[in-house]
Length: 111
Length: 114
Image (cartoon, rainbow over all chains, first blue to last red; front, top):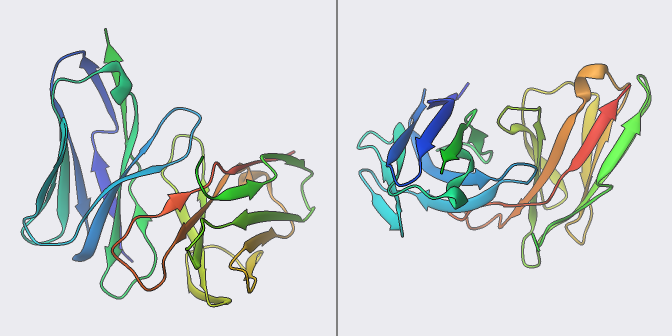
């Protein structure tokens, strides 16, 4: 079945630095979504990417969908303490209704 | 306000018992998906309900069952509870006809099996 993998599992970042988290699927995806879960909270939808090679920006966050629609990345610039949390990518296959989540990248920020 | 309401927020059950969790979707959403999230893990798909039918199911045993009502609310039932069923159970709602929109998650039910 479809598997979604994320690296790294943990990201410790100095405030003000940039970092990237990566997501890879074992199968071609119809779309990929990104969610953020704060400690003790629930996943909150950030964005969805549908087209091959698509790039979307939300302020300091840049999301990219690979050309083969099997991988994605999230790049955060000038990390702030508000960026703390776990970032999940979630993929949906062409014949799937379900959204399959990766294990997440947990981000901590050093002030 | 998440828009998705789950109850109860916390629950402690004994091994072998049965539990029912409830979810009211965000207004305008007609599809409900249930996920199990163990500590430090990503959400694992249990099943999805649309038009009162189970539309897709993940790799969970038959002890996990569900229901969707005409008002789109949903229940998750787990029979013969095991210690390993202890987790955060998340309900997510979405629009069944619009596949390219994100899910709205509830705050979850924290189930502890002792």
